[in-house]
Length: 204
Length: 115
Image (cartoon, rainbow over all chains, first blue to last red; front, side, top):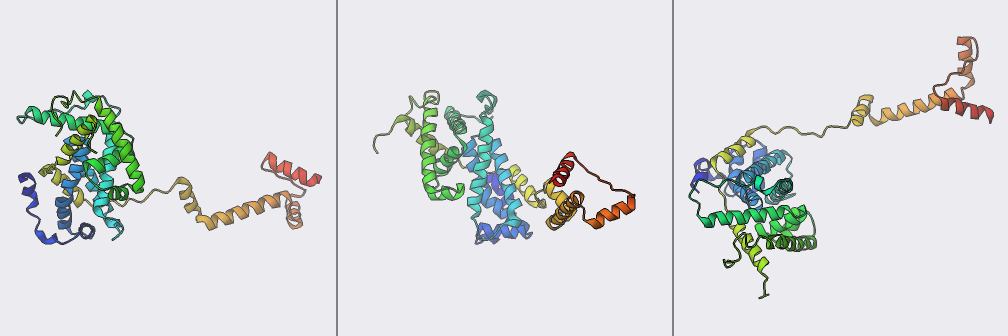
């Protein structure tokens, strides 16, 4: 990860034992190093969550910046012990992503086709990108709450109780949403099997 | 479950590929995020509604209560003036004067005098 290091090495390991919440409260009381430490700790996770749902780097970066901005804004009002910072961020990010997906429903697929990188992209890379974009577009067709539950369960690998905490619903509701969401996703994706190269190539 | 259906195999494979994504924030993104963090937090207080603003201008609920009481008293004095008011009006204007603000008031006054 050479890219991230250049700016990040400036942050000393002063906060190694501080919790996310400690850092957030330190930021609220005006310690500029706390924001750097929090960014180093949380931004990669937020960006990954957004990219998994949106399959578009530029959109994921915008969402990640927006989610972090909301974190800076909530800092002065954060009440210790009330919620986990990571849970709060998962919720904010998944909501921002479903907002984006909802807008995508009204846009024709070819309008949002992402330009390919100039890097020598082998066929396999292009195929992976096309597949993940197809998954994201399928997610966009689900009702918001189903898409969120499926994303948190299957893209983030979170447990049902964790998802229940993030979405503020019961574990039973999470189970029902993920089951229905996955069935719907499966039906949507079944039609794109051949196009995505799942006919001749054995599933991993 | 040993039997899996092919679309689910595909879906599970796609989920796994998505989970494998581990993007590294680049310098530009980090700079954007830290610039946001350095900016002072705007004080976001919900804007009071127009009604709430008018209420505050008058002096809040207690003032509104007094205003309502005064209004009711005024209407009542208009409908059934106590003798002292009627005498004062007669003294001032020289004759019996009846003033109404709306058709309803005339009707109410009429009902009262009939009954």
